[in-house]
Length: 174
Image (cartoon, rainbow, N blue to C red):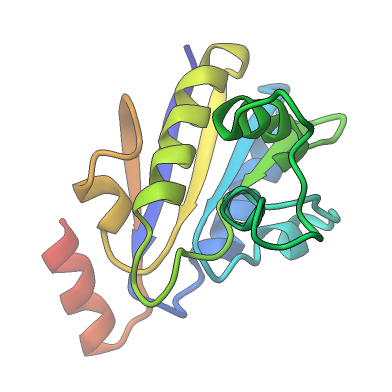
């Protein structure tokens, strides 16, 4: 089972950059493959890692939701929405030689992350036995940690800038 390392802190302090550097370090030091998880609705980890991504978990959720009411989104006849989503989840995993990347993507609407958070949690649980390290880039704050989305999390790296607000935010999170 992989070691789960999560990034947390105030917004704009370098969590994504540090996450990318940690993934690079782990890969270069032979601790690969690494599962990189971008659990931020404002997904940027793929840009830091220099990879193009396929559909995000949020986009797949949206496809399933719109199937039946929007002709652009179709589920093959005889397959349930749940089975179709299960088949499509593999498309959300971007694979490289050193790491694989799973991106949460957008929410279900203003402030609602319930379903996509659940997808992130289930996918990490399914995949964690295949990776020695799982590095999770979280959104600002401790939302994912406090909701129990990260199974078996071993380490949280609190990232802060040197501002008073940054240090206070890290202190609240700690």
